[in-house]
Every structure is written in structure tokens, then in C-alpha cells.
Image (cartoon, rainbow, N blue to C red; front, side):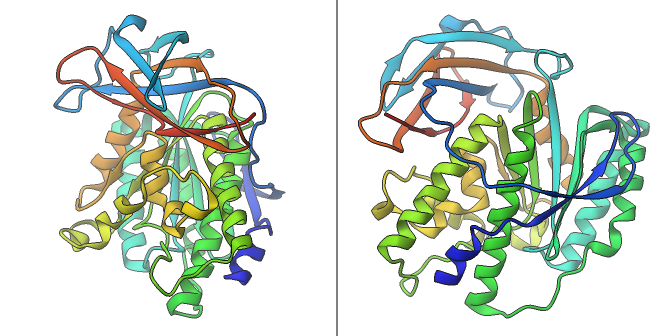
Length: 360
């Protein structure tokens, strides 16, 4: 575990393909990024809220008075409110979809299948995408990403084809040590994506194709006090960085029906509760699916129609609400607060971030 913790501090090389909004070109340039850090004493908590009916369709036309915000179950005054109902197609409320292909935690056959499904999504409607899309290819050697985004699905599919030779998983040690290596690579890549997306305007729907990161949980996994403190700081940094960058995470399992009914696909639910202190931490709290739920995203599995699953995630860009409230001052650093959103309408479900870390 000490090797794992030391490696959390070493940034990966992030390669960026310089691109324009309309015609991305695969020009790779080295780029480094540091892990996201807590934002400090800012008490403004901004939330992107997805509201759907029983069929999963977006609910439009709601007003501020229809919402109630709870901070640790205490009602809060809504400081600002507005509805986004244009697909994020504006300069004031831009939305982009970030597609992350995870070749580190996914077998080659599943990656090949996901590749075909992702290309089908990009080429729908003659390659005319409803929202700007960017690509990230995550492999053992690092992550390659397209800097900027594009609505040209044909150009993005062509760019994706040029990365095909990079989708190979290197032979590495198996068992627990192999899992810690994959876990470490996954965390560092997420941190780098957060750092980059923090510089981009608007909301980002980050769709991650992966059966999940190793949860590394069990009776044989024991953390020292120092390790627990370091990993707690990692959780705080991830939570704050994802919120500040306005990233909503979606986890799509490319294994499809091969995973249906398995215990593994629901195991992440054991770790959804917010971590209040280092002593309450479990490595499972850093799972990909856990981050998806905690950012207000979705976990999708047991489907062989990944193209439709991608479209369902991207549909969250078409209509949502943005509201904010002033957080109470914390009594201590990194004090966890649970967030609740209630909508005063029957049969309505609201998804948003499940918590945040407050500062004194």
C-alpha cells in the first residue's frame, strides 16, 4: 500500500491532440497536470440538477419555488437559479460530452466491442452531434486526449481510428499488485482530466467506458494512519475538483450482458456514503461507479446496446437546472456535508451531487 500511496503523487504524461471546434486533428503534444486541490474558503455551492419523470424523460418548466435544498438535512436558501433547456448550446451555459475509453481496466475484446458502439454513436445522424464531444483514450502508457471538443462526429471517428494501435494492455503483475497499479493509474488520470476540464467553460458529462476500477477492499487490506489521511485528502480533492470543474461522471460497463446478474456490478453500492473522516475511509470509496453516483451521474450495465446507453447519458445535456446556495462555515477543515434535493411535484426524481467538503 505504501507503493500505491507514493505513486499517487506522480503525475502521468497527458498527451493532447490540438484541435479546433469543427475539425480536430491528431497532433500530439506533451502536457502535464497536477491533482486537483480543494478550492478553499468559497462558500458558494453550485449544483447541476437533473430532473426526470417516472419514464426517465426530463422535466421542464420548473421554477425556483419547486426546489428545496438540504445541507445535512437543514433547509437552505437558494441563492441563484436558472433552467437550461437548449441542450447547453449557448455561450452562457455550454455543455460538452467527454467520452473516456478505459483500456486499463477493460479486456481487449470488450474494448473492441465498445469501440464499435462508440463509433456508431459518433456517426449517427450523418455525424452531426447534438452536443460538442471530446475523446480520451486511457491506456497503460498514459492518456491521450483531444483538446477542445467538436460536433463533427465523422472527424471524431477518424481521429479515434488513428489511436487504434494504442489500445493494447501491457502485461503486468496479476492479483492484488496488478490491481493496485490499475487503481493508481485510474486515479491519476481522473485527476488530470479534472485539472484540464477546470480550464474549460460550462458543464461536462464525462462518460467512462469501464467495468470499474479495482475496489481493493477486504479483510486483508489494512491502511496505516498516514495512508488513511493521505487517501482521505485524495477523496476531498476529487470531490472538490469534480464539483469545481462541473463534471458529472457516468460509468458504462462495456461487458454488457456478460456481467448481468453478477455480484460485482452492484458491489460499489456498499461505498456510496460520504466519507466523513480518515477513520471511516475504505478504498472502495474511490470506485468509478461511486464517483458517478456522488456527482449526480448514472451507472449503466447489463446492456449490449452501448450506443443507446451513450445517447441516454448525453441526453442529460438537453435540459437541467442550475442552482446555488451558501454553505455554512465548517467547524474544521474538510468537513463533509450531505446534500439533498427535493422537488415539490409527484413522481419526480432529482439527481445532483450527494455531498461536498466544507472549509472553516
